[in-house]
Image (cartoon, rainbow, N blue to C red; front, side, top):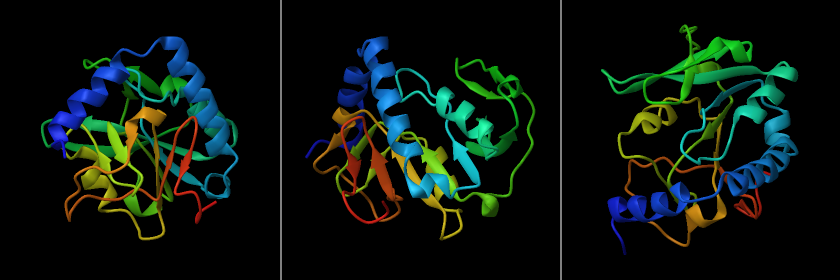
Length: 191
């Protein structure tokens, strides 16, 4: 089995070479899937990533959530302490592009992690057992480990990012669901 770093490198190479049209097409299909799920409809406070470098696009989903009056929580990256600070936004203009090239809140309006009932998670590689490999810095693992037990974790990914099996360790946090343009994993359960 390939190591996490080998898998990360291989899948990122494919993702980075996707056309903008394919990224947009996949993202629209994924948005249609997630917004039709009860788990999404029942959520009130949603922590969601800002897409970067051909990740599944979240900007339209964020607009949709704001129009539905959901509380939208975006990560603010504290790179000194290697933590994400959940920060609420109420409109798109609350965001600014940071030095890394992705959007984050202009000002920090911290949200208690206990208030979050749904987390939309990015990642590089996933498997059908709902395991996730991120960028390797542990930012999301720290957040996911602190969620209330009832909070759901949904990863958004392009279908090629979901493999049969990937290396997972005891401390790795599994997703409750992974949504791609073609599939929803698991096929039963939370739907």
